[in-house]
Length: 254
Length: 254
DNA sequence: TAGTGGTCTAGACCACGCC
DNA sequence: GCGTGGTCTAGACCACTAT
Image (tube, rainbow over all chains, first blue to last red; front, side, top):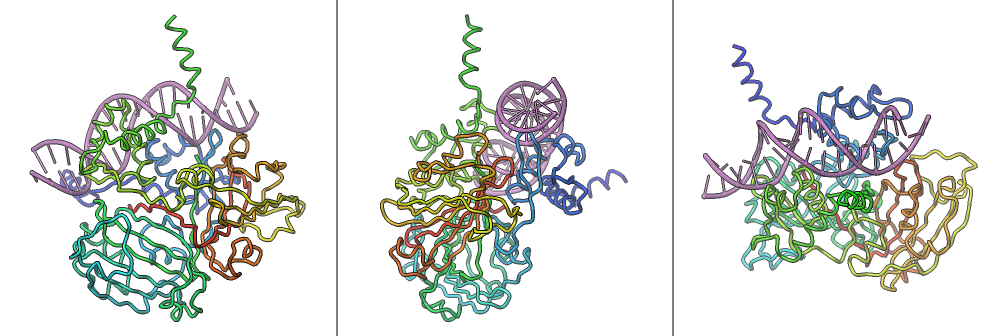
């Protein structure tokens, strides 16, 4: 009887992932105020180790993740401290999940106003990544989306997906989170994304949607998404409304 | 005799920092071609461990650093691979050291054309960080610099340093790397920098220098620099020439 | 000198991809 | 099934800060 119970336990929780669980626990306990003193100082590591019953390795993995997210910082020889209020008016560049999910986190709603999809040969693409060599007969799924943030014009996205990797994209995915759609199948899970951030005059195709004159400033992100196995999945240009788009990141200096 | 020799060895190398040494070794051996096969695949971890005589922990610290820098990526159950040619026309957001050093890395030269410095009360600052509370009698060192990249207009920087932290800034530091100047003294070593990236119309004060009409696009970075002990050191706005500034980063998806 | 975080060793088991 | 990378434990020593 007990033996069967243990087996079921294991089946229900195949992945432990102590670190992620621990991160959430610590955040919860920080927010409830039970973990920090008046100097915003956390208990020392040996203390936290016994509190959460993990080894130093796991604890420090969690603390590192917290510091990357900007929740805490550590001072050699002194302690670990909680940082003051986070900015909530900007999008974290290192966010988890897709842009829609990140927007939800900061209490905003991202929707797609219009989307179009078309299969084209590589030669007809408006731009290509520099680091990838295509065959002439490769096919791309060309997608253009106009997206709203809290019902205001936010983003025009021109993207290309390699048809050799993803056969087709259902229309409903275009109007929701494409990121979430890809994550559903293990074969199309994204591993890393190269991003180049710059500013450019707003292109003509976007000016009407943005309700701004062409040539206005815009924040432009070019990105190339790769699967977990290193294969190129997609590349895109995203023109953001400069009055609304702010990207946030924390740079660690070593 | 041997005993004395060992003592001297230790005195000469107080810090081991195997990880950083290992990272450099691996990069060197990748570039010389002796570490990768035709698929750009590195030897497996046990192999690398014995090759460099480190444990798995140290090896994986190094491999993680390499993947954050974009040199490699790892595929679960398959192996570690070297990435194709890096982009060299953009600045890595996660670069080590100051901007001048990063520019040297990609073969470009950053210089300061003009710089001005002035001590002001907090109330006269053109902008302030939202997360810090000043006293009314706090003093700031206000610095404005116009900087060139390969002799072309690149950046206007408006920054404020807390005089309570850094008494004064010598003029020669303004024309070189301020980052390097701060790193010299242990008391002013930077721990982390909050960065907000956006796009704005070029302000009037910068248009003449940039040789562009006011209102042209510009890439704007606001940052707040903190010492290793968490104390605020400085905050600034940096307006970049949109035709030249490209920022690069790699986003890991977990 | 005491207490803190930073780094490294040694070994184990798990999850994934491929043959 | 086997080899790969991903995670976790247990313990040690080092470097930094403050007293």
